[in-house]
Amino acid sequence: MRAFAREVSKVLARVVPGEGLCLQTVDPATMLLTGDYVEDGLPADDILRLIELVEPDVDKWIALRNAGTTATGLAEATGGHPNRSARQREVRRPGGLFGPDSRVQLHVSARPGDHLVTPQ
Image (tube, rainbow, N blue to C red; front, side, top):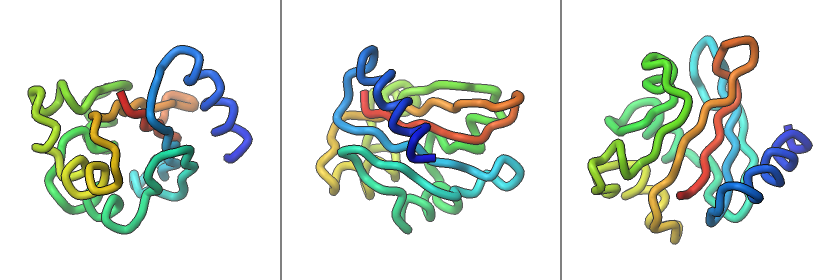
């Protein structure tokens, strides 16, 4: 996954400016996080996994999959109030990332697999 993530990072850096990158792999059957690759961002630690699985929040991977959405931004999902997101309040802001993030699903054979998170 690291080689793939480095290549994705190179491509994104040319077209999407950001503070960092977190590429997360997800089991497509369960939507559970199975790994991550981080460049100048926050790793998918326990609180982020808890928010993704249990806590109410916007733009969860499973919600994006179920809606058939491939990309979304936290600013749009929160009506311009990113602190409405538990992920923003409890993980990103305390970690020094103040801008809202974008989430993009990368599909293989039309199934969610890898997910990409890049700050806006």
